[in-house]
Length: 87
Image (cartoon, rainbow, N blue to C red; front, side):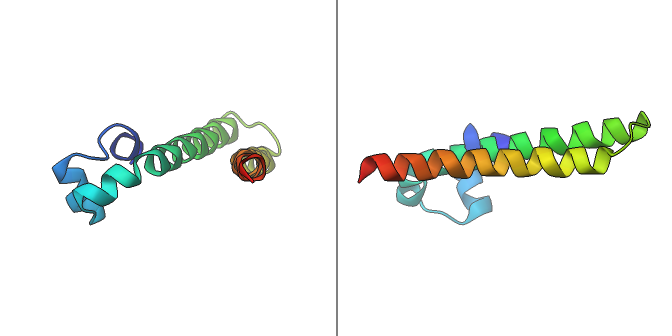
């Protein structure tokens, strides 16, 4: 749903899918875009892991898990840093 969350969040049919009003969509546009980017990066990590697995690379599962965890920690650290700087 990366396209819906990042590019088309305020459009009527996207609001119907997610059950939001025009006002809610306008207020949450940046949050939705951030979530879309996070989902995209996690999807890329999963695809990379499958490709590595198909190529026979050893420990591909571990590589996928570590990559996904790194992405999640990076996104969380960015949010925590922003929150700390805002106070």
